[in-house]
Length: 315
View 1 (cartoon, rainbow, N blue to C red):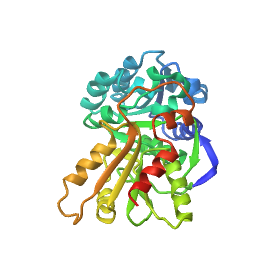
View 2: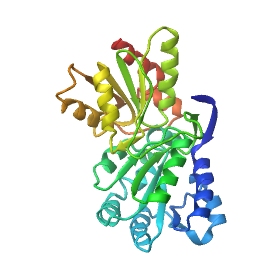
View 3: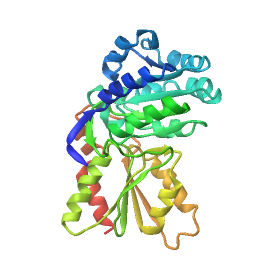
View 4: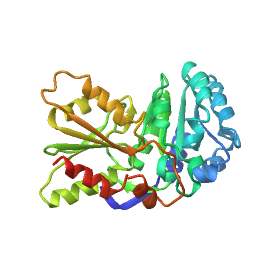
């Protein structure tokens, strides 16, 4: 991890799609009166005939994306994460998923990343909503390299994706030539007894904790899930066999979160050979509030201190 090297995820969106749209004329960008916030404004300027502002009308945007797909286009739609998940779930379900349309749904500033926009703009339930929709792939990039990869992968292959991304700058985890693959996560560090699985940019905090513990002679495993759906069963089963405890850190409600999916997978396996305890560190079934990212992490018990103390319970 290069903590000193950060890039705004919305800048990654801009830079990647400026290249992608030049190479691939089937890609079209749709926004909901948030082009300046999402990073799409330069795309509207460069490709005015392939960018559409739907205004504050996410349901229409999602339904229209289905129609655009059936003309041979690959639409990318954006709004705040709650407005392209819970607000538009029926249009996503019927017009996109049931219709087997191509669409990448860019849900920005999920969970505590919504900061001062407060509880109306906060989503702690999007993993649960979108993972339950057939045909939907759910991706949580941990840095700009992973985000750029999924945009390019979609432009080349199509499909239906929900990608949950903060607009803000996050630490660089991977190098520019990192290889990513559909449905696959990454094991970044091996440890002894405890493995921590991260779901998005929260990975940076986990890697800092890993380094702090390593300095004390304590070694934990660290994995980047990347795909919430489909889950990387091969990676997770490897962790189940190797570790006694798997801790899942997610900027999401523990109810319906990925921790529950992983616990279900662990419980369904009868060939592990030893008990595996799956522990979720996530949002405790509550609404969001206004504050800085650091304040919200602490309030929601997703801060480094809480995560580290939870890990220490099992060592």
